[in-house]
Image 1 (tube, helix red, strand yellow):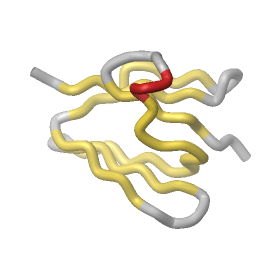
Image 2: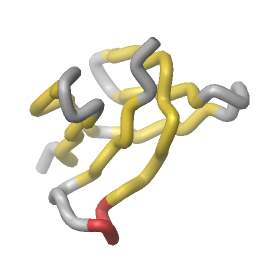
Image 3: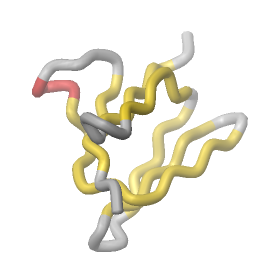
Image 4: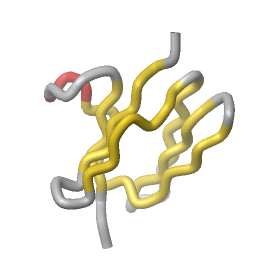
Length: 64
């Protein structure tokens, strides 16, 4: 199973917003993430810009 590290608006350590993410739901007005413990994270006005299964990274960008 892939457990993703999620970045918002950049790819540096300070841009990490969630780790061990196993589920992502994309809606027109937000992205919802769920980690292995069941904790959810909601990002309004965000979009997925990159999914890298080899590096287990998911990149989000806030829409202007």
